[in-house]
Amino acid sequence: MNPTFIDFHKKRFEWAFKAKEEFLHHFDPYENEGLSDSIEELLDILQTELENPNEPSRLQEFYQEEEEEWRIKLKNFQKQIEPYELLITKQASMIDHKKEEAHLLAAGFTSELDDYDRFLQQIELKNTESDHIRVLVEDTIEYTPHDRKASIINEDVSRLQIAVERDLGTSILILKQEAHFFKIDLATPLELPFIPPIPAIEQKINAFWFKSTYEKALSHMRSLAHDWVTEMYQNYNSLLTSILHEVTVQKELAGKEAEASKLAYRQKMNTLENQLVTYQKEEVELKARYQKASQKLNQFHEQVSQLQGYLIKYWLEFKEELQQDFLYGNAEGRFLAAQYLQLLRQDGGKIIEPLMSGGDE
Image 1 (spheres, helix red, strand yellow):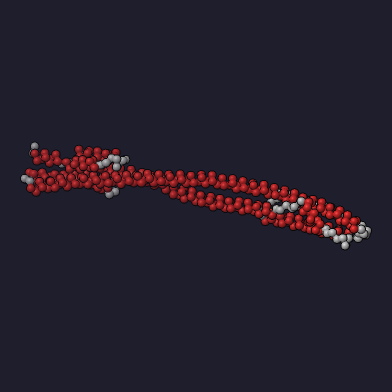
Image 2 (cartoon, rainbow, N blue to C red):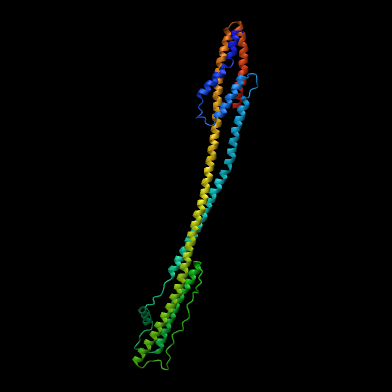
């Protein structure tokens, strides 16, 4: 057999083997983790193409199938990622709404507790010390030795009773108004128990003839007035003490309700925020997986592009070698070179062009 023909036949796919060898020399499986199987299968198909030059090429089909597989992965990741934007937005909105709701609720509790405090500040007990009441009684039921009349004593006693009743009644009325203003419901009726008035001095003669008789009557009326004022003050204090206790209990209950509300808010916020963090983590993980898959697809393109580059490099070198034989060889060599140039174009079209067209998809 013609040695030149044998040499050309042996070299027919030498360019492709050189390209494959150089590609493998530069291919780092650690930098291309997850692509080794795909690249290995690609090289296996290339090897099959070289060993069976007359069989239809599967390179383009493989390339497109591999690329489609990566694109399907990317689409699946996108579909999984899409709902998270809405979930995160809704969750953040729920958190903001819950914060606003809790703020308003807390402000309501603070206002309610402040109202209780302002109402309680209005409660002031009367001084029931004997000396204090005695001064009040003596200042009102005056000692008038130069005008010793029962009517004067009665008038002073009546004036004392009216003043005390008016003072206590005004205080109770104010408490009623304050309770209504602060929206405090009281179970205790804001009314003083009725105490019979102090009986007046009744005698036919208004004037006291004797100073001793006058002073005895004045002392007796002052004693009755002292007891009456004391009982009025005690009843008033008892009423206010009852109200004080009742409102204090209401305030404590409101405080406990406020604390329970805070606790419930914190628990709810923890749940909502934890769920938000979960959504955000899941979204980040999916985006990372999407990004990794996208990088792998790009790496696959790059590796195929590198393989194409090596194939084209050695294809051109072999083409140049054949062209030299075609231009400067003997007649037989030129004939064979022309034949193998034609085969080279066919082989390049079968091996290189499918990858190039695949890479353009």
